[in-house]
Amino acid sequence: MSTLAEIEKAIEALPPEQWLEIRRWMVCRTPKVQPAGNAHTLPLVPATGKSITQEHIDDALDSD
Image (tube, rainbow, N blue to C red; front, side, top):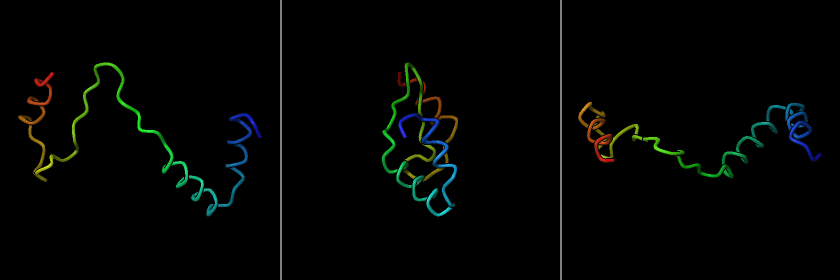
């Protein structure tokens, strides 16, 4: 098994329990990817635990 197509075919043939095991393995080993270029990332919830407001968004965008 050396091509992506062969690997995909083998994974598709797995029973659900083994498929989930492979998925967990992949999630644990997925590299962290930084956003490309000038992409902005905002937290889903600020560190305070309060809801994100338009002011939070504006401040994050202005910080560039």
